[in-house]
Image 1 (tube, rainbow, N blue to C red):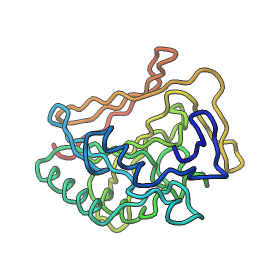
Image 2: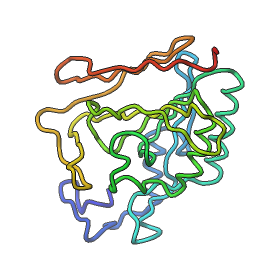
Image 3: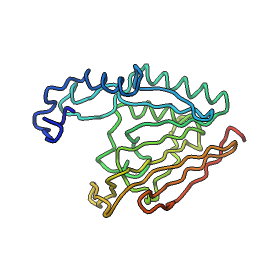
Image 4: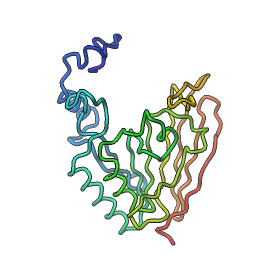
Amino acid sequence: MPKYADPRTLALETWPNGTTEDSLFRSFFRFAGRSAVHAETTFGGIPVLTIGTERYMHYHDPKLWDEVWLSEAQLRWLEERLRYWARRRKPVMVIAHHPLPDTVSGTRNKLYRTDYLQADALLGILGRHRDVFLFTGHTHWDLNLSDWYVRRVVPGTANLEGFSVINTGAVQTGFADNGQGGETTVPGRFNQGLQVEVFRDRVVVKARDFTAGTWLKQVTVPLFTTA
């Protein structure tokens, strides 16, 4: 990892510690068994699209760190796949590591407002589709917060219902707002996640506390494809 001088020594001052950007992507491609960051799969006939950065921005601009950079090719691919599945009246699950601004917990915090360099373009694509479900992480913010799930309306997309955005929580350290524009850790053991159930006319998303073995909450989202 470029942030480490060795597997146990964090060394941000000497970043990237001899690691090349190309080697990071090649390592990911070997692990994922594919040749691109974005990909599509299906589970039980439900499409799942993954998107992600195609540049590690600190290599390109020392003032930046790990902001998400999406190529025009990836954005066109996403737009085409969403149109394809909309014509087939299918809900689409979109998976992204970083959260979009002004969506779920933490995204109005200064720490996460600028995670995407093409946020407006991405919002413009997602915002046209009422049956899109965007799952994002990175913040580790607690699923107990009220804005763990939101509908995001994007002006100019002619979709007044917006699309669904869900925080995925975290499996080790959790965070919440510290009231000063930053964040603070959630005390105690922290291990959260989601269960997603897709029906003909609705999607049910359940938040789970794995440490306690209890359900935290759930939301039922009607599908417009069946209206």
